[in-house]
Structures are given as C-alpha cells and as structure tokens.
Length: 368
Image 1 (spheres, rainbow, N blue to C red):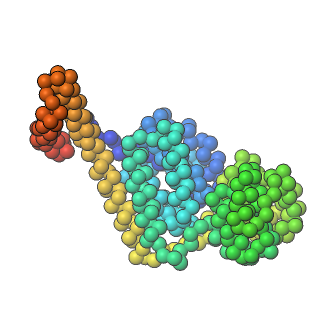
Image 2 (image 1 turned 45 degrees about the vertical axis):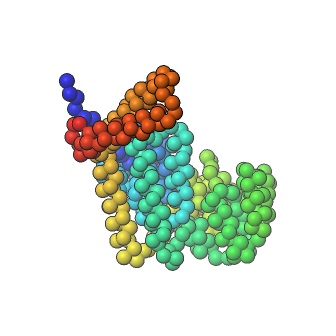
Image 3 (image 1 turned 90 degrees about the horizontal axis):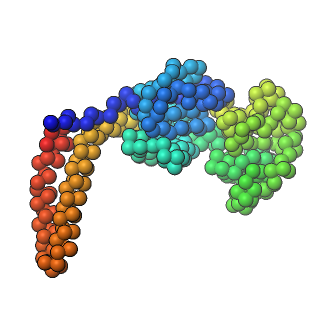
C-alpha cells in the first residue's frame, strides 16, 4: 500500500504570547510572566524572551487558555511577523537598539541549552537574527542605540554616581557616565566583574555589602537582575536629592518608593512612555518590506519541510546501502585499492542518477 507523504507542519501552531511596553507597565509584564505557563497545554518548542520592555514566549504548540491582562496571543503568520519585527527592533522604544539583539541571542542560546528548540524555531530564529543584523545596518547614526544613552540624556552630567550592576546594560551606563567625566563607583554581586569594569573605565569598585544608598550621590543607577526591590521607601528618602535610573525588570525601586522620588526617577516605564526614536519613512518602509519578504520565505520553507525530510531520508538510505555493499567488497579481498576506488566512484554516480528524478518529484510535492 502506498502511504501518503507527510503533511507540512501547521503554521498556526507557531504562537507568540506576550506583552510589551506599549500596552503594559513593567510590574504588569512581570506579573504576566508568572502566569504564562498556565496558557499552554504543551509546547514542542519554546523560547522565553524577557527584556527591559517586553515579555514574549515564542512557541510551537497550542494555547490552552485565554490570555488575560496585558498578554496578547498571535498565531501563524502574525506570530512569525511578530518575531521578525521584535528582533529587527521595530517594536522597541529605541528603534533597532543594539542591546535587544544581544538579549535575543542570549534567550535563544538558553533555550537551545535546555533542549527547548527544534527545527521550526531554529530556522525562524536564524532568519530573525539575520533580519535583526540587517535592520541595524540600515538605521542611520542619528538613531538612538541604547536605553542607557536615553536615560543618561535625561539626567545630564552628574558629578558623582553609584552604578549597581556589571552586565551589558550596566557597562553602557558606565561608559556613558565616564564620557561625562562623572566620578563613578560600581557595585555588583559579582565583585570580580565590578572590579574589571571599573579598571577598564577608570572607576572605583566597592563590595556589595558596602553598598551605600544615601544622598552622597548625584545619581544612583540600577542595571542588574533582582528578585526583590533594592530601593525601599526609607532608602528613597535617604537618597535625596540624588536622581535614580532603574533599568531593571523586575524593578529595583519598590512601587511605594517611586512617588517619593517623583521626577528624579527615570525607569523603564518612563523611557517607554517617551516618544519612540524615529526612522526615516524610507528606512521604515525598507524594514517592513524586509520583514514581510522574510515571513514569506520562512512560511514557504515550512511548507516544503516534509519534502526536505523525505529527500534527506531517501539519500541517507541510499548511502547506507551503498556503504554496506562496498564494505562487503572490501572484506572479500578480491579487489585491490585501485579497483575499489573505481567501484566507489561508479556507484556514487549511479546512485546520484537514480535518485535525481525522485528527488525532484519529492521537492515538487509529488510521490516518487
């Protein structure tokens, strides 16, 4: 009995569930992150992207419940275009921001290390990262590049600053402050990294247990991962009149401390509410066209995936049989190496010619 060829993966099983700064606060997004696992029956593949201005789960599977609060569900082509748009930086407060691309790579590497990706998301992320690199090459030098730079632009040039953190975002803040000739002190839970960063930039490093949050500083900046707020109401009062930058998600400044800081606080919600950096109309059209074209190519690849799998299996089986018979010839001691080399070449050509027509039919969606 002839069996039907395998069906192409259903593109509607590609799903993105998440929320961004456009429709929710940092606190709301972090609360939604805890509820995300309840929305899925089972995901065959998944990547969790949790950045300064968004929480997104990119997956292959079915949504079990109805998204609530700030969460939005996208499926099929809408989901594919969402991934491409996010990685290109078109949905960011800083269009094509450099930090986002690094965050996407980190989220993807984490998913791969946890064996949570497969062929469908691997190909989508390969294409998305390519689009992301293209997007950054297409944006002009006048376009903002980092949330750190935008936050510092709102602060000016403080004489003294305490920076809490030593990762990529902290390094951008540190570099910007040193360009402003700020006397900078760096604290981190990883003291070696704080010491190394301070040494590179001509700053000072202090131990985490020596962290002093008081009015001694003109600026206190947080750019680190936290599980609980670092700045309580009491500490916020003690910081007066220092300005505060909070680029943490979850936030480093406690909710009840934020009103005490007032306009002295620059956080992710403040930066998200500011006018987004703009592209020229021509550049935006080019990027949107690039995203649409890449979505078309990806969905076409997805439709052809069973044919590629069948071709791969056909060629693998032919290679296995050929190797088996060549192995028997080598064990017989009836042929010398020159004769075996001739047989090797001839059988390779023969198998190639025999498989040529069935391969073309499989790629065209026909039965061989």
